[in-house]
Length: 140
Ligand code: CMP
Image 1 (cartoon, helix red, strand yellow):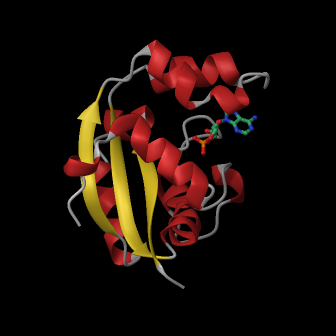
Image 2 (cartoon, protein in one colour):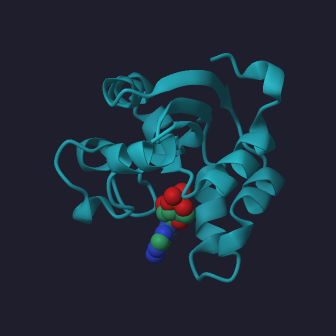
């Protein structure tokens, strides 16, 4: 167990429904600290690059379109075992499989409009954070 950072996106379905505060409340109640946050409109190029690991998947084009369909909130979260802790708070990728008490169970609409993204490893957290934040924008 150690203090870590992870990267989070509050996705367009959640900004559209004005539930960014509800997401942040669940993040903070899980013991994670929001140490950087900004609301942005992603460009198509940014979304394509961010999700490039999925570019061979059949859902890639729709995923990119969805991620630029409205504003998102990009965040850096800090806490004990932040990557695993946040994945636990988010719940399963498909909200139909998400456990009670998770963000996706409470708020997500579908596997695509699933309200939040979180890094899947320490290594990817560092890469994803660097896509959107400079070190001086992160204040722990
Ligand atoms: P995320 O954690 O942001 O990473 C990739 C995203 O692809 C995932 O969340 C889902 O929202 C989205 N996605 C859309 N369709 C699928 C699918 N069939 N299987 C997995 N992920 C999907």
